[in-house]
Image 1 (cartoon, one colour):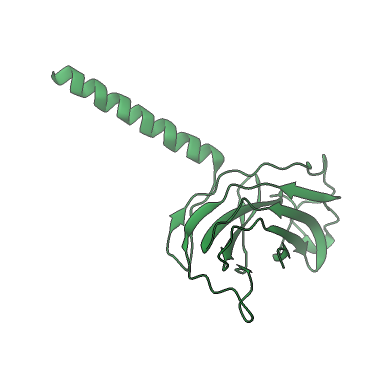
Image 2 (cartoon, rainbow, N blue to C red):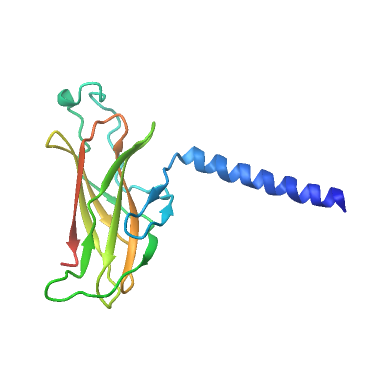
Amino acid sequence: MTSAIRLVALVATAASVIGVASALAENMPQVRDSRTGKVWTPEPVTVETPGPSSYSDRAFDPNAQAAQVRGLVVQHPRAQLMGTVPMTAGATVPIVTLDVPSLQVVPAQHWLSILYLTNNSTHTINAVLGCHFTNGGRNVEDVRVVVPPAGPGERLGLPVRGPRYDIFVDRVTCEVISPT
């Protein structure tokens, strides 16, 4: 019986190590929703339009950077449900609200913005967002984010993948394209 318990403990430890190793391999940071306090780890985002195959400058001198991702990058991130909010959409409250996005870098991978979208209505919505990664006011990459359906009153956390880590970005702005 003792060896059976040891075997179970060994398997559990191995599974834990594999889980930690896969999380570390992704290098995805944990983030906290400032409104709900929920801590979560965004899943990697798939990108329909690849970034440039080469780059002209690295981030050593951001003002001299000439790199830009051409075209519009479309993303379909997995949303994390943060919780629910009162459904107050009406004359003075928009159907959808979007918190100011955060900006961070995933080392040796890409820039990452975390967005929080809130559906203030009593209906399920299919939102589309537009995000712009910039450097010193110059456009670096435009991203169209197709948000999974958000149920009535749901608050969603969304990871948005930006350009490669070696292309300097100092700001990200996002807006709701639809519904308006």
